[in-house]
Length: 499
View (tube, rainbow, N blue to C red):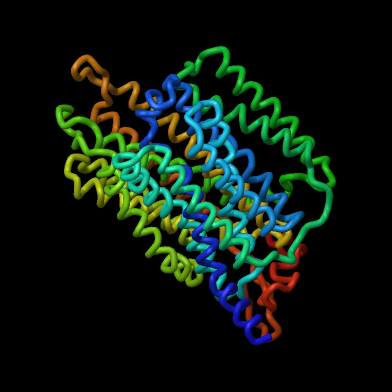
């Protein structure tokens, strides 16, 4: 019995690092294909437009599956759904390693999109399993894994692609995925907190259709033409489908997304801020990568390789890892709303540095790292706000919607930055390249969105207070409970009343 208890104790201590490893793997899987994109048409015999679907497919499937798998986790078990998401991610990587057929590669990348649900599911598990004094720092670390994995994935993939066959990269990620899946199966226990009921299949299909129309239109508008009949048809279909879906969700007995809860300011405003922060954050890596790789003949470019570009973004990833516990302590002392607003303001300040000077490498790295610092503060505060505002039985689905809003923000940012750069170009050796003014406008746009996110964060209502037995007042939130107890979250009536 002593040996069994010791083994269980080791597993309990490893729960947080194992879940964080899964979050880092998710971000790495999304990033590793980027260095391959210029060479994939030659390697696969496919067109450049077809190859771009290796990114689009992951974006679409991740956006659709994140809220769906989050809801499934709340109903059928978060550990079970987490393992399924990690298994799909690993399977997709194995398929990429085995084939050079573009259709199979796109399918495999769509499977990997399921990993986007790893972070919200893990955050929900941490809320259910950890004592209150450990939850804040663990959730902060889990939230920062998105930036950490992205910063690590780009240089790692570039090094492998540069010195080995491109299939080796996917074999490496397959091995990492298998390790992450095995560790999660061994270390993570199933949460007893469930919300029983019948899964809303119609709601899941309606949300999937609406999101596919929206994100497909946003991601492909630049290539197909924003005024083309296809893009306009997609946006029209998105509005109609989501309107019908909204009506169906309000009438459903057990909806996929509790829209009445989501419409409350304590939930709706963090979702809005997540969308704006996702936009502001994504411009950092997107624009920086293009700017430093631009030829030196442009007058501003540094002509760096993809490996060197990844190393430029690496300090930001290290910063996110180191600052996550600091962010948790700040949220505990001042509240997550203040941390979120401060993070958005720091992001705007980072873009101010980029506007002031985007020619010197050290200033570029400094500005990018400052943006990553603000992103850490914002991303670690968002799930804490959601956890405080929703019942324990809806934490995975609510955080899934929050991650979805970040994804939508990133997709809109990609389209907006592309539109800005396309309209600010100059000829270089017969090829149109973006001007420095175009890059600075993109930074200004992202910084402005960050300031709007700061204002939205400051508008989030604070936690209501309730009297204690001694007459003092304390914030209403999650009560301490024994590990694994079904009452590990706030009472549903309290959460709904406070929202």
